Amino acid sequence: MISLGGIPGPPLETRKPYSKLNGSWSAFDLEFPIGERPYFASDELKEKLRVSVRCILVEWAGKERKLTLDNSRIFITGGAGFIGVHTARALAERGLRVFLFDIRDPDPELQWLLYPVKDRVTVLKGNVTDLPVLLQALRKEKITHLIHTAAATDLEILINQPCTAQKIMVEGQMNVLEAARFADLQRIVFTSSIAVYTPKQYEPIDEKHPVHLPNEGPTLGSYSSFKLAAESIGLFYWAYHGVDFIALRLSAVYGLGMRYPMYIKPMVENAVQGKEAVFPTGREMRRDYTYIQDVVSGIVLALEASGPFSGRIFNISSGDPLRSAFEVAKIVKNHVPNARIEIGEGLSDLEARDLRSRGRLSIARAREELGFKPRFSLEDGVREYIQEFRNYSGLARQRD
Image (cartoon, rainbow, N blue to C red; front, side, top):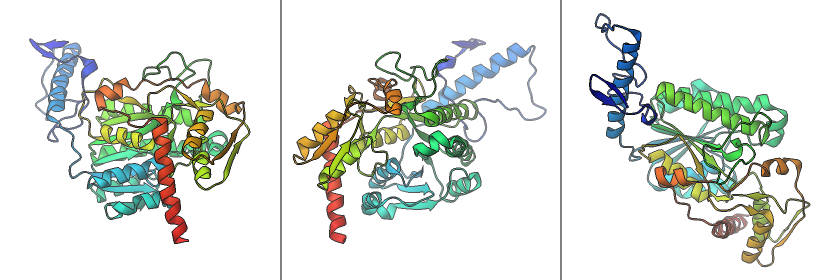
């Protein structure tokens, strides 16, 4: 405890940065009008007073501040993508206005998902690398909350064109948080990745697991590096500017509209369409597959949770033991008996590197502090994915 003059303050590790209280103070700077600055006998005493009063004010502000999404206006960067569209639909179904900020339109299956809520979803064209456009959009649309999903996901760009990926994932993160700071947003939720973790040191892997080892490179090339850098930038804006930032480390997200195949996409979609899915290798590749609806639940909970938080980073996954691509194939065949799926033994070099960093994930912090409760086992999620793809592809055939 920090105490001055008999008035205790909360421990420093429990303080919750808070940017403004009636527009008159900052959690990290006590300001006095010119001519009214108090006299301190020493710099040490001045610092003690500053820290103590800061902690008291921040703790009080945190108690008063109750987050709610009522009447909120939600902005999603990378909003035309897989996670962005599913999240937009869930929020719009609650009656909220959602704005999708992206350089492209959603793919056809994602447009289909948005159709029932199209009156509450607006697509805005823009790039996170353009700070003025980003800030103007936040102010014009009176945005209150932001979900940052924009990222580079093309392996060719991530491995061989890292400067391009850096502009999107690092400079883009800077722009998003700088815009959020000046637009005075209530909270920013960033979709990070378990790819930030080093080769497995222990299980279950929690948020304190190492993300750097002196003798290891990043697990998934520049993707891992830039997701980790983006987390660090977010924590800087939280600690020094009071931006209410939360990062969610996601794992192997799957469902209708996914782009990165992870074996499960061609297995499901080819089976429904009566096509074969053949993979020369990959049988042993194991992941904590997380169904998209559980990820959306985690994002929405992170938007509205009021804390207190023991940290600003959370694992969001099923929390179940890892499952292999061979097991995924068996589950698909259980639901589509005529599915033709062949998958050979062995792993690619990238998969072998990736697998060393995978292990059972701890979601205890998300359960306790966000109220996160995953609902879909892999079997349940695959069944839902198959049904959604059948619904979409059946309607698409009717239109053709």
